[in-house]
Image 1 (tube, rainbow, N blue to C red):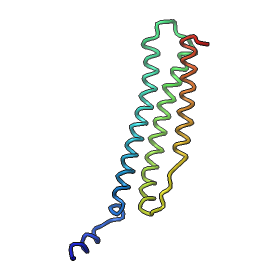
Image 2 (spheres, rainbow, N blue to C red; image 1 turned 60 degrees about the vertical axis):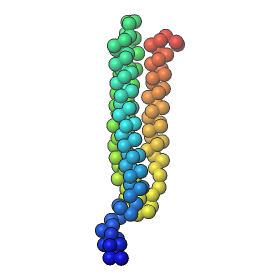
Image 3 (cartoon, one colour; image 1 turned 90 degrees about the horizontal axis):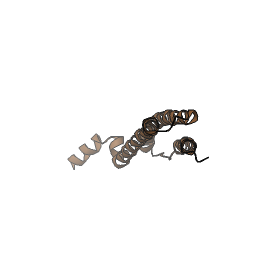
Image 4 (tube, rainbow, N blue to C red; image 1 turned 90 degrees about the vertical axis):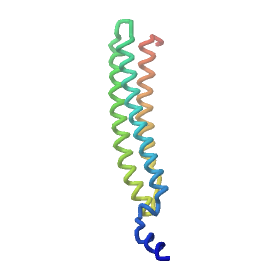
Length: 131
């Protein structure tokens, strides 16, 4: 009986919700991997454009490739910043039992990635002379 009393005295607010905190950490790490991937895709597209294009460079194509690369870096950094703040906010919400899922991070990331994909689509159409 005394051992159970000692364990309950040593229990912190975080340890009460340990499964939720571990899930929050896994989600955070998944977002970190996502931000790294977003940045990597930008580097890949830019590198492929300048390293493998055998036709004379199209000024608009060069500009779009650079824009895709820079945009991907910016979106990756924004994703990392948002997810870091979200991780700590969710940790507090879990402890206070007031957790609410966030819509703004998902909506913002979706809009930014859609813009990058639109620019990539324009790049593809221009470079491969489909329009």
